[in-house]
Image (cartoon, rainbow, N blue to C red; front, side, top):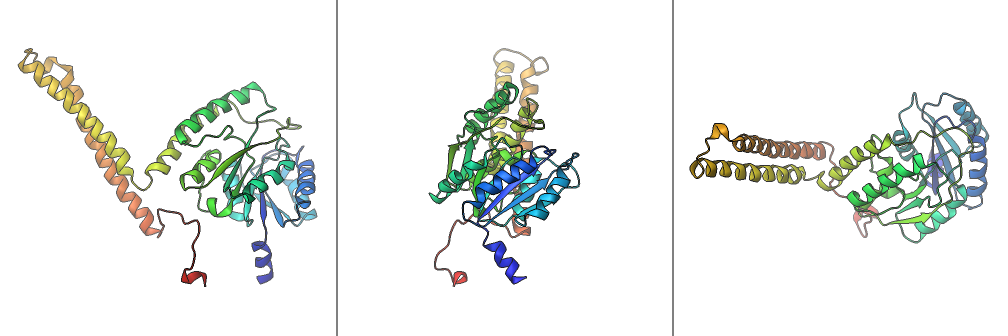
Length: 326
């Protein structure tokens, strides 16, 4: 057991590969990936996560696992989505550097050494940019819209959040928990805890087999997940600032309409039952009070969350000369 644990600890690179109905690409993908990464002279593992495939992908993955001990396979009971597959890969892999990529042969394994070079330069996150993307306009247009929105609201400008091929230091993402469709926001999560991020152009190839599941329908999901990500990043430990600020704004506007109603009553002689401004004032004052109360409840929940699990609202990148290191 100790020897196995030591081998796991010495793994330098973990390649995370979500799989969903890729029977026509898997064998060629693994052959090409193994050829490239074996030439690096580093200990590695390839973690395949089958996300409920209904074709022959599972059987092919079992064949790959039998023929290559460095290939590890996780089989989901059903289709849970790419985010869940990547999250499982993060949790069950052991490498110091984690590189997720697609199994559809559109990501080029020959780009892996360039990702590692950037990591060796000191970056915590290296994101791929499919500048010459080999996809239809139905995929490229919504992707460009989403990238502009995420970069603007998220505060981290990247040309291609949707590119699956990225590289992460394990210590940066080991505490990240992914839900929904949030795998595309991992660089944003890392940026929020102070990770250094860069972007490199990658080779993007035409899909050789199978079909894609991306399109315009994903835009609204991206927007909803982006709102969640932004809130969790900026207000996770201080939700009263968000809800309280909204509450005070509503209270101020409500007080303004109430004062306007009084002005109309005593200066212009407009009675309140004929003045809709009073109803607006009452509505806004009540809504503002509710926002403030919601902020207080959120503060209580945050404290329960951290204290019950003994979690800390910060991340430590390194420590020196502490007793526990001796």
